[in-house]
Image 1: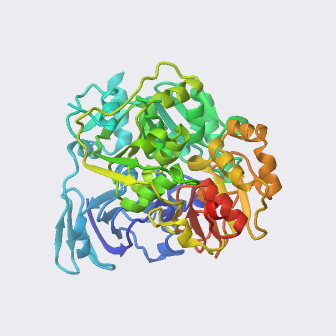
Image 2: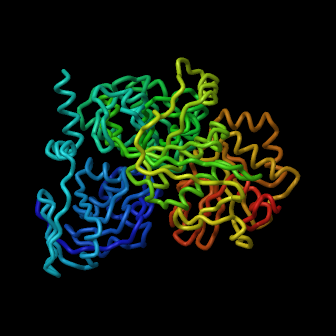
Image 3: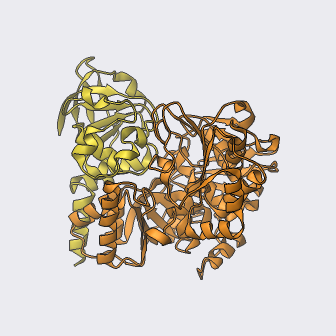
Length: 166
Length: 419
């Protein structure tokens, strides 16, 4: 998948209460959750986002609760990719399961500024910063996780496992 | 190969040989957990997977504890989804109403978790059961749906940071202070993707409840699990909860640790985590004079009977400051009854506290103690993220039940030793 969009940069240790505060967890609807994405960081944050824009974060993005509503809210907001210095563990797994592309780039995060235009090749793990001309290559995901991605995510993977059992 | 606690427990429930950290293994799970917020999404995914029945109706726990007693129509609808799924699947361990408690206080007292178990829960504080020597970790709803269908899940074997606590605990200093101190030292991503393994003479001396308080907050350092060895105390706790067949558990001599930390606690006073991250830890005396509007005693971190007793010992014969709302939420029906039978409620009510039902409630800004802009709360809960308990302009300070109780009396953050 090739994603072209503008970056929205957030800080370090962005927790899931910032991504989607608990008062919105009375629904599982992606549109409703998306409309309130990052409401715990800054009310009305979502207004700046255009479809296919990219979230850029510092370390430990998605720390805190296990709520899957967090990656669903980001996807629901029209953001298909998050690039971070590092991700919190549960959020990372949830992102994969929900089909939100998560790219961990370490110190290269400094090469991405708020408002830069990026072209992201999600399969190759390549981020081209069209504003500065720089390119970042991300580390490959472990083979087992790639298998999950190739299957289309955890839901089709389990579906296939259950079918194989019968 | 010599195994850490994490490796040893995982090895016990996989057919693959564990040879190194970072390896990905499939493990059979002992128990799968979800709550009223996370189960509806898990049920959605479970249905999308085309899974007919859960892998074992006795090994799923569905606990409606977060927004219950249902705070509004939407939360009531969510619980309805969980209830109907539980009935259809004939789930043995479905909890709502008079038998429900805060999940991580409830499951240990029901004997549903114990040493060498692998527990996965759609709740980040599932790591609490590490206090009993269980490899227990939080996951998202879809991972939990997969585990409910297959009875297994995949894990990346985590590297382990071993933390020894040595020295002598001062009066009014306990498990909550130990874990806050550690998080202050290593930071909220200090154990990211890693297992924490606790040891040392202070740990050996801690009660099982105290160990669960510490394990509970492993996630606040980014940890996957917070593990304690299972000793005679653990076995006695599990036996009293109705379990049979549990065995002692400790790490192998010569196991490989990524990092070894030793913390001396002698002379350490009560610890408080300041807004808006659990790593902003200060000694309680540094915060003297900071007014509070609310105090919460409860949650999966500190809502157990020992916590109730610790708070009551401070509150006995004293009055809550007129500018403070003190809310006490015993975490399970059993704890509630115990506190009542021991006369603790008289102490709380005489002091001017509100005693509420078992619920996660205010911890995550659900209900029963939401903060307005500019308000400050001292709380025995586990997270103080911005807006966690209400307004984005409110503040949460994390501390032990003794500090929360002392602060409620003083009207400002207070060292119980100096009350």
